[in-house]
Image (tube, rainbow, N blue to C red; front, top):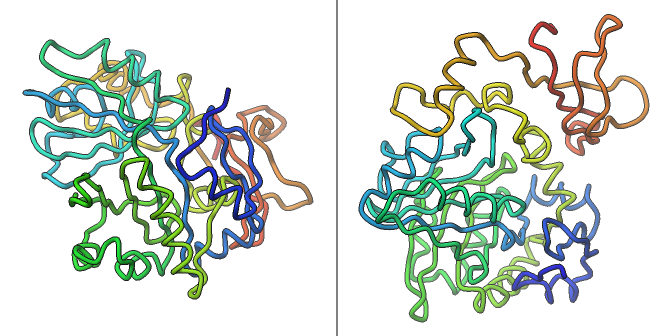
Length: 338
């Protein structure tokens, strides 16, 4: 049976078209993909991301273990700083792409893709040394993402954040802080995956719907609106951000996916390091490219890509870009393709 997020009832009340996604009942659209896309590009959109996984790593050596579990350098993060990274298997192929939050030396948070929560949880437990505690707290935490040029003002003006509105306005990119509300820890971060100004709010499930409704009701006068999975995909596609299950999977390395910048081969050992070092030396066999369709139709995931009469790869993502008004695609192809 599919799960429901803490905000599910609000989606139904606001006319969301519900589909099953990653084991959850989620809204794919409200007003329509193009309209919702435009709302995020020009105003502010709210995304229910409560299905995303929250896995905490705690105990002495938490930073060192997190550093070993992912390809980017967790040890170099300051307290209150976040990094984007990938978690690989020994082959150097991607188990998931995720965000790492460093609270302190003994407390780390991995925010992982919904489809991979159980897989990453079991993987981390299997490689964790004695003394490291791995907790999957996903079910008790709600998450709201607020994206768009008006996102900062929408949050800072809401009464829920009245005591820390200055902190929201001053929060740097890929930084976070926590505050207490009604005895609960609330996390506010600023990352985003749309190409716009973006914030994420993590809070106890029981408080999530109330905050969601408050932000939408108070933001309605400035055009804020709920956004479904459809526009979430087109928004991440336009800046060329990878999506697990499309550009990333267990048959693809981060080097092939253009993520060499999150693979810190010189910063110590991590799972998959030897394989990735060898791949970098030999040069990856494939690469991601962008494509524009000149005729009619939209390229879809799995379509083959041909060059000079040869099949050279396949489409990983394709859509009509609401901003550029063109049909575009991302494809993984042989490195030899121009």
